[in-house]
Length: 92
Image 1 (cartoon, rainbow, N blue to C red):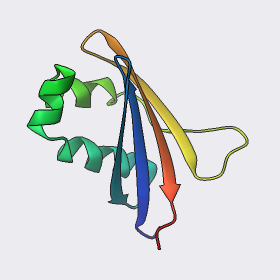
Image 2 (image 1 turned 90 degrees about the vertical axis):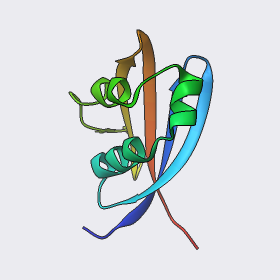
Image 3 (image 1 turned 180 degrees about the vertical axis):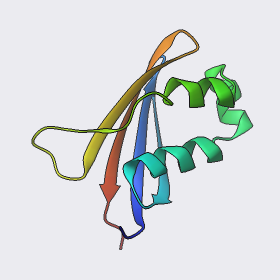
Image 4 (image 1 turned 60 degrees about the vertical axis):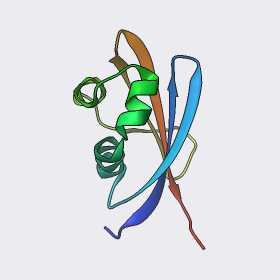
């Protein structure tokens, strides 16, 4: 599979946070995103990196019905629901 640009949209504690990652799959995009999460952003969310990684460790991105190149993933981080949408993005 070729490397692609994935948009990662996180809904967490009433906020929506958008990032992008270069990866070969939606699962890898989430891993890249988690690895690149800044300490400042994690502090803003009141989380530690291992809490966020644990929230998504037991699940794989699920394709969204009726959509192409779109997946979702959810988990519990810091006792709150965290929902991620992953979209394979076409770049210029």
